[in-house]
Length: 321
Image (tube, rainbow, N blue to C red; front, top):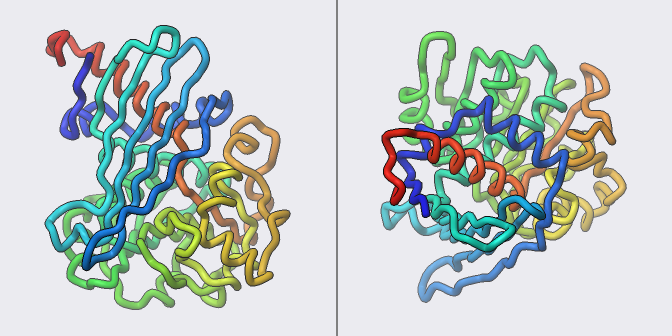
């Protein structure tokens, strides 16, 4: 069985290949039961979350990811999201690989957002606003820059120093990355707004949005969390990774439905429909589009398969690795 750690994953994966692997997986589909979602009480602190996410393709591979999400981990010097992925042969059940799940999740999540952007953002999008400066933010920036000709990036964070540190780290020739403290002005400036926060209250206001902007909502993963207000949801054409996941856990969507700002019928399509040609993406340059990602087990399976195949092809690795 291969053991693929975080450092190896960073070498094995790249966004062009991973985006295409996800496109193919969303198009073909796989068996993906509803993920287990459990609350873990923490004495004296914010509760944590345990996710268990299985998926398989008949005659191919199968896997299960376990993920923990603990909002207080920053104070412990740990990422908020931690996980492992167990990949198996779907014909025999034979173990194939144990893969570090935290980095795998960052890569596949960012790649899914970029894949959605390929259908939903304007092709000439050059300006990206990144809302949030956590571990997922640099992956999202690189993934969006793979799909669109991003030239300028602004990073906003509740902690200004974190935004400045990330901007300094990512600022490179051909990509101008700066920190911003003015979320409203930056939202009006952006062609694409990507949000990856653990916010329980709206950050992006619908009144700020300019025609043609694309919203990429990644962070709010529970039914009581959201990154946009009702007006933003009502102004946008809404797309999701999977309808089942979005209607079970997508707080931005569920809270807007509860308030009456939108209805379930306002969800235009999921990623299977977009990738298979069953639904159209952006209709014109003035539309405001919105992609709500809650994460899907098929994304993990696609990323794990790619990493496993590439790791096994490396001649320097011994069979035990």
